Length: 355
Ligand SMILES: Cc1cc2nc3c(=O)[nH]c(=O)nc-3n(C[C@H](O)[C@H](O)[C@H](O)COP(=O)(O)OP(=O)(O)OC[C@H]3O[C@@H](n4cnc5c(N)ncnc54)[C@H](O)[C@@H]3O)c2cc1C
Picture 1: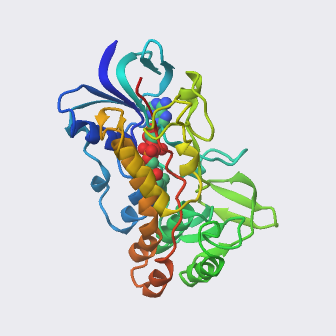
Picture 2: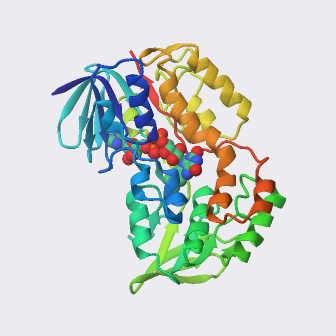
Picture 3: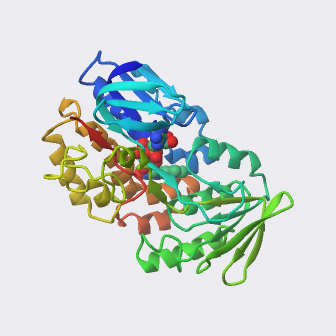
């Protein structure tokens, strides 16, 4: 059994930020990070934008290994024993901890009954799969009109693919933007060669030779070589619930991101998953900064900072980035998008168990 002063489950942006936060306060404490992806922590945002615009894949890596961290990759943490203070992974190895951070994020929502090969876009492996298949003129169906769907549609179209977007809302980003802006986006995308199909629910996806046939509830039948979906995520809370921690669309935690403190629990996770104001993010952050957390003074800021930056503050510039980077000549649109603000629910804040 390996023992760590700090054990982190989850090798995403939060896991990486936590390693760096810990190291800024504790230079020597042993850190283990269990991640079920084969790759070390990397930035996800470029997967739907920058990498399609010429950025090199090498630019996404976070350099977590430079923090003196044992990266235990390609392993899923399958059991947590709060009394024994151990985590067991799917190789059967058990890891002890003094402090544990659950930074397990979320998994993409899938379409029930859809065949293998539909890409639920989230990882660098998904990027590589789609990139490999996406050639000039390749027919692609993008399912979903939110952030991931709209970014991918733009990126794929900018790379010469024949993109059709299907989503049930009236307009691209309808759940995020004011309706006039969202409707404007439909036309904007169409002007860029994307076949935008609002109000269309996917009824079924079948294999058709090497490709797919996507059928809509309104009767559309779309043939595609690539089907890629951006349908949001669901929290990966099974490790926590398996250990007896409560879950409520994530793991409820207190302002210090500590799970199981029922007196002060503020259900930050749920708060992060709903729309809210920027002001609230600042207040939450201030609260976290002012208390002791996972690793002592300022410690709680490291996981929270990462989820705030990954999941909240960036959203303000994100819509601007889509157009500024994918379609750099879109000045008019940039101006229209800039005032939009909302909470982006894709970041599932972690819960620290600091007892
Ligand atoms: C394509 C794309 C583009 C994005 N662009 C932006 C953007 O421009 N701006 C923005 O603000 N946000 C963006 N986001 C969202 C942002 O990337 C997420 O908010 C952020 O990645 C959340 O990080 P996380 O570490 O908390 O969770 P995750 O990224 O979900 O990472 C959790 C990690 O833990 C692993 N894991 C889970 N359970 C276990 C287990 N039991 N054992 C081992 N490992 C486990 C998962 O496999 C995963 O690697 C984007 C997301 C995607 C997918």
